[in-house]
View 1 (tube, rainbow, N blue to C red):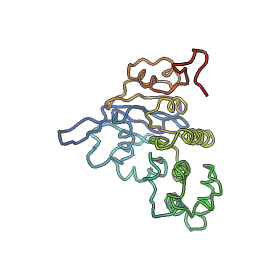
View 2: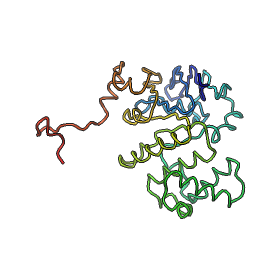
View 3: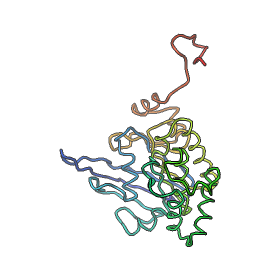
View 4: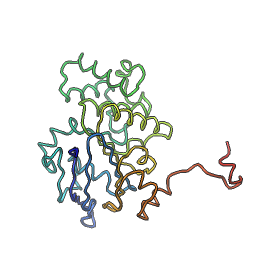
Amino acid sequence: MTESLLTVDELQIELVTDNGIVRAVDGVSFDIAPGETVCIIGESGSGKSTTAMGVLGLLPDDLAVLSGRARWKGTDILGDDKALRKIRGADIALIPQDPMTALSPVHTVGSQLREAIHHSGVRGKSAQTTRAVELLDQVHIVNPADQLNRYPHQLSGGMLQRVLIACALAADPDLIVADEPTSALDVTVQASILDLMLELQERTGIGMLLITHDLGVARLMSDRIHVMKSGRFVESGDAQSMVRNPQNAYTKKLLDAVPQLGTWSGAPADQGVPA
Protein backbone atom coordinates (compact mmCIF):
# COMPACT_ATOMS: atom_id res chain seq x y z
CA MET A 1 0.00 0.00 0.00
CA THR A 2 1.06 3.59 -0.67
CA GLU A 3 1.96 5.39 2.53
CA SER A 4 -0.36 8.27 3.33
CA LEU A 5 0.92 11.81 3.14
CA LEU A 6 -1.36 12.99 5.92
CA THR A 7 -3.20 10.89 8.52
CA VAL A 8 -5.54 12.54 11.02
CA ASP A 9 -6.89 10.52 13.97
CA GLU A 10 -9.73 11.56 16.30
CA LEU A 11 -9.13 15.28 15.97
CA GLN A 12 -11.05 17.36 18.50
CA ILE A 13 -11.12 21.17 18.49
CA GLU A 14 -12.90 23.41 20.98
CA LEU A 15 -14.37 26.86 20.45
CA VAL A 16 -14.56 29.30 23.36
CA THR A 17 -17.71 31.46 23.24
CA ASP A 18 -19.48 33.87 25.59
CA ASN A 19 -21.85 31.02 26.44
CA GLY A 20 -19.16 28.47 27.20
CA ILE A 21 -17.09 25.93 25.30
CA VAL A 22 -18.37 24.31 22.10
CA ARG A 23 -16.88 21.23 20.42
CA ALA A 24 -16.24 22.65 16.95
CA VAL A 25 -14.62 19.44 15.65
CA ASP A 26 -15.59 16.24 17.37
CA GLY A 27 -13.33 13.27 16.71
CA VAL A 28 -12.77 13.26 12.93
CA SER A 29 -10.32 10.95 11.18
CA PHE A 30 -9.12 10.84 7.59
CA ASP A 31 -6.04 10.25 5.46
CA ILE A 32 -4.73 11.48 2.12
CA ALA A 33 -2.47 9.47 -0.19
CA PRO A 34 -0.07 10.95 -2.75
CA GLY A 35 -1.97 12.20 -5.81
CA GLU A 36 -5.34 11.78 -4.12
CA THR A 37 -8.01 14.42 -3.58
CA VAL A 38 -9.98 14.09 -0.36
CA CYS A 39 -12.90 16.45 0.17
CA ILE A 40 -14.53 17.63 3.39
CA ILE A 41 -17.95 19.02 2.56
CA GLY A 42 -20.59 20.64 4.71
CA GLU A 43 -22.59 23.77 5.35
CA SER A 44 -21.13 26.95 6.83
CA GLY A 45 -20.18 26.37 10.47
CA SER A 46 -19.96 22.60 10.15
CA GLY A 47 -16.26 22.58 11.11
CA LYS A 48 -14.68 21.74 7.76
CA SER A 49 -12.32 24.72 7.50
CA THR A 50 -11.62 24.53 11.24
CA THR A 51 -10.46 20.95 10.74
CA ALA A 52 -7.97 21.97 8.05
CA MET A 53 -6.70 25.01 9.96
CA GLY A 54 -6.31 22.90 13.10
CA VAL A 55 -4.06 20.46 11.28
CA LEU A 56 -2.01 23.35 9.85
CA GLY A 57 -1.72 25.13 13.19
CA LEU A 58 -3.54 28.22 11.90
CA LEU A 59 -6.45 28.42 14.31
CA PRO A 60 -7.56 31.80 15.72
CA ASP A 61 -7.22 32.47 19.44
CA ASP A 62 -10.78 31.38 20.30
CA LEU A 63 -10.18 27.87 18.90
CA ALA A 64 -7.81 25.25 20.27
CA VAL A 65 -6.94 21.62 19.52
CA LEU A 66 -8.11 19.49 22.45
CA SER A 67 -6.85 16.07 21.38
CA GLY A 68 -6.06 13.81 18.45
CA ARG A 69 -3.11 13.18 16.16
CA ALA A 70 -2.04 14.43 12.75
CA ARG A 71 0.86 12.58 11.14
CA TRP A 72 2.74 13.95 8.13
CA LYS A 73 4.50 11.06 6.37
CA GLY A 74 4.40 9.18 9.64
CA THR A 75 5.62 11.99 11.93
CA ASP A 76 3.16 13.49 14.41
CA ILE A 77 2.90 17.25 13.79
CA LEU A 78 -0.22 18.24 15.71
CA GLY A 79 0.69 20.95 18.20
CA ASP A 80 4.38 20.81 17.21
CA ASP A 81 4.98 24.40 16.12
CA LYS A 82 8.57 23.76 15.07
CA ALA A 83 7.60 20.84 12.82
CA LEU A 84 4.64 22.76 11.38
CA ARG A 85 6.75 25.81 10.52
CA LYS A 86 9.14 23.52 8.65
CA ILE A 87 6.50 21.88 6.46
CA ARG A 88 3.83 24.61 6.18
CA GLY A 89 4.24 26.47 2.91
CA ALA A 90 6.85 23.96 1.79
CA ASP A 91 5.55 20.37 1.95
CA ILE A 92 1.96 21.50 2.60
CA ALA A 93 0.64 24.65 0.90
CA LEU A 94 -2.62 26.53 1.41
CA ILE A 95 -4.93 28.09 -1.17
CA PRO A 96 -7.11 30.50 0.85
CA GLN A 97 -10.76 31.18 0.16
CA ASP A 98 -10.80 34.86 -0.83
CA PRO A 99 -7.95 36.19 -2.98
CA MET A 100 -8.92 39.81 -2.31
CA THR A 101 -8.19 39.41 1.40
CA ALA A 102 -5.37 36.87 1.09
CA LEU A 103 -3.18 39.23 -0.97
CA SER A 104 -1.87 42.56 0.31
CA PRO A 105 -3.46 45.48 -1.58
CA VAL A 106 -0.37 47.68 -1.17
CA HIS A 107 2.18 45.29 -2.70
CA THR A 108 2.45 44.16 -6.29
CA VAL A 109 1.58 40.64 -7.35
CA GLY A 110 5.24 40.12 -8.24
CA SER A 111 6.58 41.12 -4.83
CA GLN A 112 4.16 38.79 -3.06
CA LEU A 113 4.91 35.89 -5.38
CA ARG A 114 8.66 36.49 -5.04
CA GLU A 115 8.28 36.36 -1.26
CA ALA A 116 6.73 32.90 -1.52
CA ILE A 117 9.54 31.86 -3.86
CA HIS A 118 12.14 33.26 -1.43
CA HIS A 119 10.76 31.06 1.34
CA SER A 120 11.08 28.06 -0.99
CA GLY A 121 14.84 28.62 -1.05
CA VAL A 122 15.39 30.57 -4.28
CA ARG A 123 17.75 33.51 -3.67
CA GLY A 124 18.34 36.61 -5.80
CA LYS A 125 15.66 38.86 -7.30
CA SER A 126 16.49 37.88 -10.88
CA ALA A 127 16.11 34.16 -10.17
CA GLN A 128 12.95 34.80 -8.18
CA THR A 129 11.45 36.85 -11.00
CA THR A 130 12.25 34.13 -13.51
CA ARG A 131 10.57 31.57 -11.28
CA ALA A 132 7.57 33.89 -10.74
CA VAL A 133 7.04 34.20 -14.48
CA GLU A 134 7.26 30.40 -14.83
CA LEU A 135 4.65 29.90 -12.11
CA LEU A 136 2.22 32.44 -13.57
CA ASP A 137 2.64 30.77 -16.95
CA GLN A 138 1.86 27.38 -15.36
CA VAL A 139 -1.45 28.74 -14.07
CA HIS A 140 -2.25 30.17 -17.53
CA ILE A 141 -1.97 33.89 -16.82
CA VAL A 142 -1.43 35.73 -20.11
CA ASN A 143 1.65 37.96 -20.36
CA PRO A 144 2.92 36.82 -16.96
CA ALA A 145 5.93 39.16 -16.89
CA ASP A 146 3.63 42.18 -17.26
CA GLN A 147 1.28 41.00 -14.50
CA LEU A 148 4.09 40.97 -11.91
CA ASN A 149 4.01 44.77 -11.74
CA ARG A 150 0.27 44.99 -11.15
CA TYR A 151 -1.51 45.39 -7.83
CA PRO A 152 -4.28 42.99 -6.77
CA HIS A 153 -7.06 45.54 -7.47
CA GLN A 154 -5.91 45.65 -11.09
CA LEU A 155 -6.62 41.94 -11.64
CA SER A 156 -9.88 40.03 -11.85
CA GLY A 157 -10.96 37.59 -9.14
CA GLY A 158 -10.13 34.63 -11.35
CA MET A 159 -6.64 35.94 -12.08
CA LEU A 160 -6.04 36.59 -8.38
CA GLN A 161 -7.04 33.03 -7.55
CA ARG A 162 -4.53 31.84 -10.14
CA VAL A 163 -1.88 33.98 -8.41
CA LEU A 164 -2.70 32.27 -5.10
CA ILE A 165 -2.37 28.88 -6.78
CA ALA A 166 1.00 29.97 -8.17
CA CYS A 167 2.09 31.01 -4.66
CA ALA A 168 1.03 27.61 -3.34
CA LEU A 169 3.08 25.86 -6.02
CA ALA A 170 6.21 27.93 -5.36
CA ALA A 171 7.88 25.31 -3.17
CA ASP A 172 6.68 22.25 -5.13
CA PRO A 173 4.56 20.93 -2.21
CA ASP A 174 3.33 17.36 -1.87
CA LEU A 175 -0.08 18.44 -0.56
CA ILE A 176 -2.31 21.45 -1.17
CA VAL A 177 -5.09 22.43 1.21
CA ALA A 178 -7.69 24.27 -0.89
CA ASP A 179 -10.16 26.07 1.38
CA GLU A 180 -13.27 26.92 -0.65
CA PRO A 181 -11.03 27.93 -3.59
CA THR A 182 -13.88 28.99 -5.88
CA SER A 183 -16.64 30.23 -3.57
CA ALA A 184 -15.70 33.91 -4.09
CA LEU A 185 -15.85 33.57 -7.89
CA ASP A 186 -18.69 33.57 -10.39
CA VAL A 187 -19.77 30.30 -11.95
CA THR A 188 -17.89 30.53 -15.26
CA VAL A 189 -14.65 31.51 -13.52
CA GLN A 190 -15.15 28.70 -10.98
CA ALA A 191 -15.12 26.15 -13.80
CA SER A 192 -11.84 27.44 -15.22
CA ILE A 193 -10.15 27.39 -11.79
CA LEU A 194 -11.33 23.83 -11.10
CA ASP A 195 -10.08 22.73 -14.52
CA LEU A 196 -6.72 24.32 -13.72
CA MET A 197 -6.47 22.51 -10.38
CA LEU A 198 -7.27 19.17 -12.04
CA GLU A 199 -4.67 19.85 -14.73
CA LEU A 200 -1.98 20.73 -12.19
CA GLN A 201 -2.74 17.68 -10.11
CA GLU A 202 -2.55 15.40 -13.15
CA ARG A 203 0.76 16.93 -14.17
CA THR A 204 2.45 17.05 -10.76
CA GLY A 205 0.81 14.19 -8.83
CA ILE A 206 0.14 16.49 -5.90
CA GLY A 207 -2.27 15.45 -3.14
CA MET A 208 -5.16 17.72 -2.23
CA LEU A 209 -7.44 18.37 0.73
CA LEU A 210 -10.45 20.20 -0.67
CA ILE A 211 -12.82 22.12 1.59
CA THR A 212 -16.17 23.02 0.02
CA HIS A 213 -19.90 23.37 0.63
CA ASP A 214 -20.69 22.39 -2.97
CA LEU A 215 -21.30 18.71 -3.66
CA GLY A 216 -21.07 19.37 -7.39
CA VAL A 217 -17.50 20.61 -6.92
CA ALA A 218 -16.72 17.68 -4.63
CA ARG A 219 -18.02 15.18 -7.16
CA LEU A 220 -15.94 16.70 -9.96
CA MET A 221 -12.70 17.01 -8.00
CA SER A 222 -12.56 14.27 -5.38
CA ASP A 223 -11.59 10.64 -5.00
CA ARG A 224 -13.14 10.41 -1.53
CA ILE A 225 -15.63 12.59 0.33
CA HIS A 226 -16.27 13.15 4.03
CA VAL A 227 -19.61 14.82 4.74
CA MET A 228 -19.42 17.00 7.85
CA LYS A 229 -22.22 18.28 10.06
CA SER A 230 -21.95 19.86 13.53
CA GLY A 231 -18.28 18.96 13.85
CA ARG A 232 -18.60 15.29 12.89
CA PHE A 233 -18.34 13.18 9.75
CA VAL A 234 -21.82 11.80 9.12
CA GLU A 235 -20.88 9.90 5.96
CA SER A 236 -17.61 9.00 4.23
CA GLY A 237 -16.82 7.10 1.08
CA ASP A 238 -15.88 6.94 -2.56
CA ALA A 239 -17.00 10.13 -4.30
CA GLN A 240 -18.93 8.61 -7.17
CA SER A 241 -20.62 5.94 -5.06
CA MET A 242 -21.68 8.49 -2.48
CA VAL A 243 -23.19 10.78 -5.09
CA ARG A 244 -25.07 7.93 -6.75
CA ASN A 245 -26.26 6.31 -3.54
CA PRO A 246 -26.03 8.58 -0.47
CA GLN A 247 -26.90 6.85 2.79
CA ASN A 248 -27.23 9.78 5.19
CA ALA A 249 -30.19 12.16 5.11
CA TYR A 250 -27.90 15.20 5.33
CA THR A 251 -25.86 13.99 2.33
CA LYS A 252 -29.09 13.62 0.39
CA LYS A 253 -30.00 17.22 1.23
CA LEU A 254 -26.62 18.43 -0.01
CA LEU A 255 -27.13 16.46 -3.22
CA ASP A 256 -30.62 17.90 -3.69
CA ALA A 257 -29.15 21.40 -3.32
CA VAL A 258 -26.93 20.99 -6.39
CA PRO A 259 -28.52 22.99 -9.25
CA GLN A 260 -29.84 20.81 -12.04
CA LEU A 261 -30.85 21.59 -15.60
CA GLY A 262 -34.50 20.67 -15.80
CA THR A 263 -37.92 21.83 -16.84
CA TRP A 264 -39.62 25.12 -16.17
CA SER A 265 -43.18 25.13 -14.98
CA GLY A 266 -44.70 26.43 -18.21
CA ALA A 267 -43.02 23.98 -20.58
CA PRO A 268 -43.77 20.36 -21.46
CA ALA A 269 -41.53 17.86 -19.68
CA ASP A 270 -39.51 17.14 -22.81
CA GLN A 271 -38.98 20.78 -23.70
CA GLY A 272 -36.49 21.64 -20.95
CA VAL A 273 -35.30 25.05 -19.91
CA PRO A 274 -36.11 27.79 -22.44
CA ALA A 275 -33.25 29.52 -24.23
